[in-house]
Amino acid sequence: MKKIISALALSCILFTETTTAQLNGIIPQPVQIKFATTEGHFILDPQTLLLADSLINPANFLNEYLLNYYGFNLKKNSKGTKHGISLSIDKHINTKEGQYTLSVNKQDVKITGNSAQAVFYGVQSLIQLLPAEKTSAKSLKLPAVNIVDYPRFAYRGMHLDVSRHFFDVAFIKKYIDYLALHKLNNFHWHLTDDQGWRIEIKKHPKLTAISAWRNGTIIGLYPGTGNDGQRYGGYYTQEDVKEVIRYAADRYINVIPEIDVPAHSMAVLAAYPEFGTEPTKKYEVAQTWGIFNRLNNVLQPTEQTFKFLEEVLTEVITLFPSPYIHIGGDEASKIWWKKSSVSQKIMKDNNLKDESALQSYFIHRIEKIVNSKGKTIIGWDEILDGGLAPNAIVMSWRGEKGGISAAKQKHKVIMTPENMMYFNHSQFLKDDSLTAARYVPLKTVYDYDPVPTALTVSEAKYIWGAQGNLWSEYISNPAKLNYMLFPRLDALSEVLWSPKEKRNYKDFQNRLKTQFKRYDLMKINYSKRYLTNLYP
Ligand code: ACM
Image 1 (cartoon, rainbow, N blue to C red):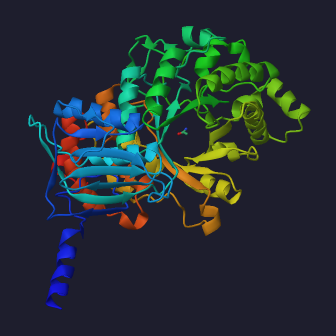
Image 2 (cartoon, rainbow, N blue to C red):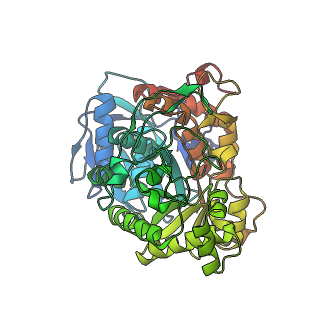
């Protein structure tokens, strides 16, 4: 009896579920993690073999990470070995989409997954078990552990506005790596807006010759203290876009392009005023923020506008393998259509009772184009105005109201309410750095639950996931971007990935301490204020 009791006690010691941070630096928090504290360590060194079968992307990612941050990588080997890291697919033990199992003991490290993508997630967890500090040692200790893990939401997104400020391909790749490290699977690339068009469209070269450049930018917080008078701009060639898509695909991240219509189109109108509601006006690529209702940035819903948009979308859809195309739909002030006799005639001819119906008509027309090419539209929640297009996915940003309404109408929803998911707002009540006006602290992001209590269980199934948004009016360089992004991206990843009942802010803050060391190692800027005050 004594023996049985002590064996039981021992088994409790061997695998202890821990919420402490000394060992677990993994973000997002896995579904299940048990450290075998008495089992010792696996030593990862240049002699360790990597058995990866055909799982080239997860294996390459691991090797690149090791080379970048520890100065060595592993030989790949297809034969069995006693001392190695094996990556393989096993759908029997990993039954859920995205599920992986990671085990580390003295002899070996095994990652199995439901798919190559799931194995890749296992690799992300593995690299977070490695020492976070810089070390010249070529012998790295991995703690013995068993992890079973899978995501809570199918859509796990992060957005970036490259119109207000442009970020080059090299940085976009880094951004994709940040998303990969946090097990996100969608990059929403906001490519067009009033302040600059950022994608080459071969049929309409003025979009890059004219629309991609502005002749100045306001200084300081809107309305600004002046204008810098500097020509500013840039765009991605179609080859750049292909390179980004390939890079993201290797990291199991889908790239969703956004072509924002019918508003946010001042840059388009600067090149093609004939598509505006005031075709004789001299439109300019915007140099200021906060355009809504003040400056005319709306497209005229004529057949020539739809023909132009069809040509643009055809090239975009040919380039992007994403099943989803974001068509914007936000902040279309109705005043320009009200003032335009052409818009009014189009409304009359199409039996549209008001400008909300015209907004809906516009989105329906765009949806038809996109659907005809086998793709689905995503739009900001204004696409609910005047009636939702039949297959549209709604991105709820003006709070959760739009998302709730769309879910009740059985449309898929991505939650991105501004008060919780907009990382361009300040993290602190008083920020030394210029930011958008609201206050979105780390804890607010962490505490967000994308499933509103207003929904029934069957309606809640339409909540596809959530997304963090990064608008770049006040973000003009990568260091500032990282400062705004980290560690709110970490909080977002737990919202999207970890089981709701596993979320614990105190434990998260503890794990962040390790994560910050890793960011130092990776030369990622984050708000250093969290080092002295983790509890703002
Ligand atoms: C938005 O923030 N205008 C979607």
